[in-house]
Image 1 (cartoon, rainbow, N blue to C red):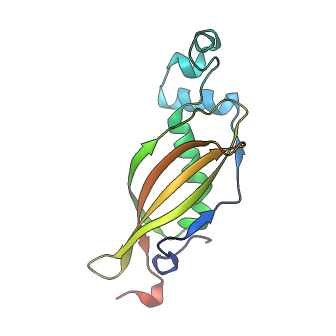
Image 2: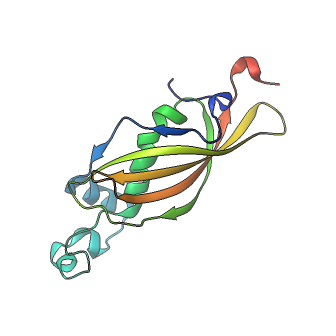
Amino acid sequence: MAGNYYEAFTVGETITHPRSRTVSESDNQRFCDMTMNQQPLHLDAEFAADSDFGERVVNGLYTLSLAVGLTIPETTDGTIVANLGYDEVEHPAPVFHGDTIRAETTVTDKRETSDGDRGIVTMTVDVFKQDDTLVCSFERTVLAEKRPDERA
């Protein structure tokens, strides 16, 4: 278990996640297939060539999902009770096949639950591609376990 218990999160800290992933055409195709999203901007090279982007754009929800996965080991792996919400999602720049993305998490708020056994942690996740262009940003709120010896 590599994730943090509630007590280990510090408001204002930024975690630079060591893993990254290069997004393939197959990743984008499979995600669109699994979610039944048949938007031609994601799947049709001819259609996308005539768009403002000039090529297919990776599904933004895939980018968001991948970013969450990249952050799990250093944040909530094995210490989470539940994801409570994803807010303020923005996609300021597109991701294309072959782009490599990485993530940074900044803890923005935390508070104990009323029973004292858990805590709510809010984090901002920023997602960048290989040239450091911000491609996604969102707020993630989780219900985190407290260390067993710290529970009320």
